[in-house]
Length: 440
Ligand code: GLU
Image (cartoon, rainbow, N blue to C red; front, top):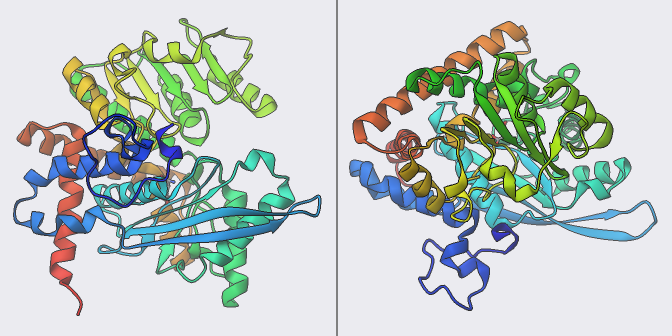
């Protein structure tokens, strides 16, 4: 996996392909390398703002912390944690915290940069940030997980805050973990500060609709793109990689709209049913067993076959670097909706474009989560809470408007939706940068 290597903070990759450590191999750029290529692709469209583009190629701040905890058996374990603030030109840092055994600084840097782009693309008043701990949380007890979360929060405590940098859930983190983070920060500052994190439990300053928001956003842009390209959602065949918060919700919403979810893959296996999987039954199965493997209403499939499944819409909603030059050619979908962050490498982007596959990029397609995080933060500040209908209606409007704007920029410049989203977002960020000017 490319993201297991610690990539250096370099803005270019060398060209030689042999006998190089994987972080220097141009065929395995890793997420930060992927992001840098995406910025290079947008630079010709930035006009005079290109003068500031180097700003986007380096994080503003990156913090590495040691997270020592006492394990239940009395031993001491150390985990490496990160918080990266990529850009704060448009507002406080915003972005999730990921607990995963493959987390690296390079990965968190890329994820923080994609947050900057995403937040600007949907025009919420935030910069971009991200955090992570290199740990497999499935191997921790609940008490160990709580100790890890609290110590990590304390270690990054001087960087975060309701008006400085606001974490949220990401891969393997959830509302309970946000409650522990909120409590730890609050204990340290001596006052309950609900606005320090989003994605909290609803009874603790969380927002209705936040849990489903990313999947709902994925569905919303999918419906918009289908309308613009003449794809009919009822009867469309959908394949989903990742069946967590994002993939599970997106699958459910597409199924409710009459689509057939024909394949689902997660870390436990791949299940397939050309007639359509019962998504509700699959969700129940995952709740009981921890994964999609051995679901009775489907055939098992070899993991690699997933990419060649006959489908109309493919939704990668797991980790980055999944659609590569090795499998992009086998993809039969008409549309790829990126629920995950960074699932497609630049080479795979080119292959998909060559095949006429429409890619709805992460930086717009999965922005529903942070959009409702913004609503949660606003509600916490004003101590006035909205109804779920209000939240969903506002979410859908923001996603539709942002997507329409990006679509138009793509048509005008004859570029992919990814480059179009980067054009919109980078211009917003760099315009803010230019207006603020350099200090001192
Ligand atoms: N982790 C989510 C993302 O990647 C949400 C971040 C947030 O709500 O701040 O967009």
